[in-house]
Image (cartoon, rainbow, N blue to C red; front, side, top):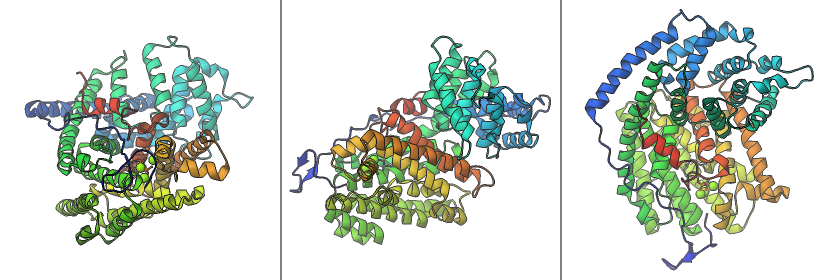
Length: 552
Ligand SMILES: CC(C)=CCC/C(C)=C/CC/C(C)=C/COP(=O)(O)OP(=O)(O)O
Ligand SMILES: [Mg+2]
Ligand SMILES: [Mg+2]
Ligand SMILES: [Mg+2]
């Protein structure tokens, strides 16, 4: 947003705000990474052997006991290794759902575990199964208060609720209240750690790599742990980290060659955080190229957002917006000098996408992503016009534009560019803003608006969700923030519903949108902006995912 508030400098005679984003936290830490091929190959061999043994555990009929199976599946998912066994797990889950195994259960932890996993795998299991835990007074039974493990499972299950699961609305309040009230050192230490972590980060809204890191440390403390599962989880976690570090090293080189960090003093230098975003979207090895393509798209939209928000004058922005709309390298001559590299790098990047997509003989969705990029800069420009006019639109009008500037209508199609399974139909579906994507975009937008309101107001950005909502409803910042949080909560229920079969797209596609939404829950935790200020929420997570291997 063009703003004349804050410090100004007279670089080129034009008043511009002083950029005050903190520098990158990471220095050259990711620039070089050396793979020890011998160790890498040896670990792969051991992983393959362990995978066969675990596969056998999943499909073996000896343990016909469904609850043992569902606990094994839950453990594999928590440890981040379930992606090796998708078919076997799907087969077991669908059998257990068809056999209606949940019907025989009256333990809260077991019912909640079945319920959560059935819902997360897209099965329309009813939340009525929780009615048995209510007394005649219609409230959850007091006896449950002694069952911390059951409360924890109920809390986690409540996060997969959709509209209409009223009992789970109550369950979330009931479980959260009583878990928070548990006096320290009254539970066994491992369970206590799980409760503390869950209250900060629910499993359903967490990022699977981040949850895997935590759950491996928990599983290591469990007496009942299976040593082979633990070893497989650790080997696999560290192997993926080597792969991710190599991708990040390529990206930091690309970013360093662009040298935006010094050429454009006003932009956020966040290449590492942009890559982290993609590890949240898909961490598996087969999405390596997809991560690199998506990370570059996020980095470029970040530079462009800062250009509209905190540096460009309206005259400059109208030229840039037209140039992107025309998408022709000859447009660069019309741009002010500082914008020239942004524009040429953007066009180069999409050239790269075209080559990559053709090379891999994949559906060419580049056209769709390009249209989404044009759409987002048009919306950035509308924000800039509102600012100059001093207009505070109604919240509804604001949102119709801001759902686009929230970037997910661009990042979701960009995330499937690198996916073999993305067809023309997939891109058509994505570009027509399906309900699940609208819910995701809404969550990203309003959560970002709450978290970045203060700093954007200081910089003179007045057209934000909080400001519009406050003005229209004559509310305080706190009241408007609470309302926007409620909008996000309702959007999560919409998103959860869209994942229940029969779904409009295969799970592999839907999970990109769900994971993009999970990133918002993690990066903007406690209404803090972990992207612009990665010391909030993100630094320690990136160190766990991309710096320090897990001790074997
Ligand atoms: C909006 C959002 C949650 C995006 C998540 C994906 C992501 C990291 C996009 C890259 C840059 C960007 C627009 C970040 C939000 O910052 P900002 O607060 O400056 O965005 P704004 O100017 O649109 O408010
Ligand atoms: Mg911004
Ligand atoms: Mg912006
Ligand atoms: Mg913002």
